[in-house]
Amino acid sequence: AQKITQTQPGMFVQEKEAVTLDCTYDTSDPSYGLFWYKQPSSGEMIFLIYQGSYDQQNATEGRYSLNFQKARKSANLVISASQLGDSAMYFCAMRENTGGFKTIFGAGTRLFVKA
Amino acid sequence: IAGITQAPTSQILAAGRRMTLRCTQDMRHNAMYWYRQDLGLGLRLIHYSNTAGTTGKGEVPDGYSVSRANTDDFPLTLASAVPSQTSVYFCASSEGDRGRYGYTFGSGTRLTVV
Image (cartoon, rainbow over all chains, first blue to last red; front, side, top):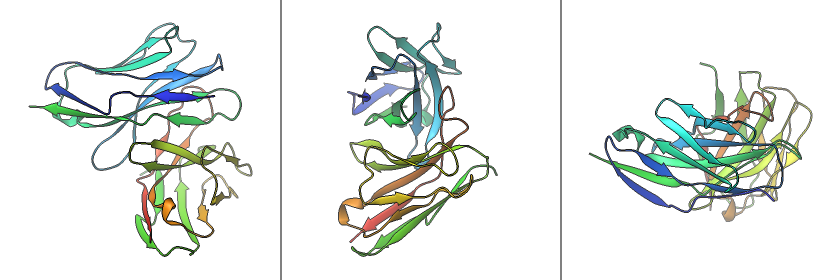
């Protein structure tokens, strides 16, 4: 069965430093996608980055990169050069590409960026 | 502005009452979803629709029903609300139901059942 685990309820990072948010997953489907979303205090959900299970390279989108380790079933989000505006809740999510194509979400990690 | 519109923004509802949360998108996305967000539990899928005319059950479908009569609208109905349905409800859509399509989310409906 699909499962997403985010073990860090909260994280602190100093402004301009890099931070890694952990995500592990479990699936028996060989074809799946991994996603990260950001939820600021205003409440909206923002899609950040995608990694496909067959992608050979780690995904990058601006200051966001996804450290994909398939054998370990981990998909950590790395935010480089943190900014105060990065303070938010971050959710890891996975969608299996067979059997209903449903996306499940982890419980989230709240990131606090300190000035 | 293209996106998803949810209504109402918030609602206080008496237990036992029927309620429909509205969701409309103007992006012509095929797939639509309803999630509820509860503290410490992340987002949990209630129902989904991969295309107009079809729906499916998610992780927590009990007490909820949906319909997908056309591409744009995906209403969520609580037939007889209970306090455990107090939550923030998000409607989402994606261009496809697989691959690299991330979700576009609505701004959410905060529902309190008393």
